[in-house]
Length: 304
Image 1 (tube, rainbow, N blue to C red):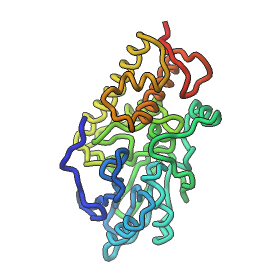
Image 2 (spheres, helix red, strand yellow; image 1 turned 90 degrees about the vertical axis):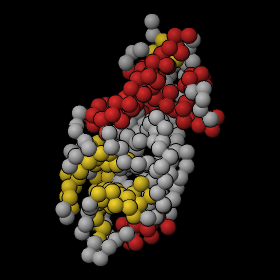
Image 3 (cartoon, rainbow, N blue to C red; image 1 turned 45 degrees about the horizontal axis):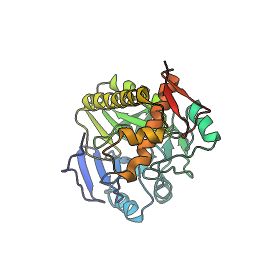
Image 4 (tube, one colour; image 1 turned 30 degrees about the vertical axis):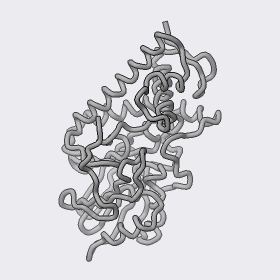
């Protein structure tokens, strides 16, 4: 699914999406972030800032400039601690006095198998971890965050990152990087876990939502359809990997080169991590075998 070319908001400008909700685009476009990170301001009196974004003075000032007469920032909520989402939280808290809320630090929510991979030296890839991030208040799955005229439900959605959360606002959901309209979410071990990711997708799919507001890109006005596409996309990728392994065993890298034939060379490392995440998931399903201790360089084969 291609990103819509007509989504090109002006960075730093607060845009009203619906009454009580505004979006400010951060000036950090890239192949991994599309036009940049979406920062959301929820409320009309006490404001929640969702995903303050990267460490950028201009974006900090844009958020502060968006505070209108009679308003104040009362909550700073971070969906996950990647460098394009969380670093501005602390400077914003210092300027406003608002507490930072999140599921936990960078390693919170990490699955057991990913913890083991990290202990054996596998480093994260992709968007980069904000290793210095810590919340003032940790919020658990199912917790309710109350503000002046608004309430958010915390939904733990690990997969893209172990500490990733979505936020339900009535029938609207802020999905961070778990569900985006412009691209599928990167799942890069040991920070990302595909088994967790798929479980979280099905959990979100079981709810009735009218719109998703994601960390990057335009609002998603068909949440169920987008989740169906995302789930099926992953199942199709799984089928491609299994078919490739039927032909001959391979590493995550060699399989990525065989499968992602139209992907620019610069993005192949991300594709390799995505394939590796699938291979770990398939290993857990007993559909593949690894020829030695699990690592990104191990050769996999199809289980007979």
